[in-house]
Image (spheres, helix red, strand yellow):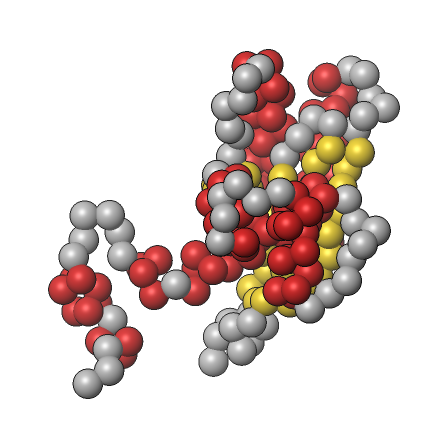
Length: 186
């Protein structure tokens, strides 16, 4: 029997910050809990935005009590200023997660898209559709940043559930088999 776990996914941003919460039930299956977006577009002060992100992520953690944070890592685009802003938002969310004692894992946007859609170049709309199908929900009125955050949480779920997740780089199959004899069929 698996232990129930709560995973918080965050798609960081200083204009829109998406969050998604999934529960891995006692049978090991992911279930939708909640998702949403912190809309910061009306706030002009960059430092006030960071304070608002801190409060929001802290409240989400207090409400849902996640054990894991899966967060999208910033990626380099054409404008270096964008990555700096994303990194600030991510840093604030990470600081809250450390304070709350969450296990933290970062995922590149491409990795989450591959995990959900099988295509690292999938659109936000494709990701949203696959997240809804995977979780068996209909969330037309949710912003795409929230379904991106759910995708990051699901990516973490898949990573945790994979038998290969226990294999660290540099280890061999022999070490994996020796460490997990219950996973080998004879």
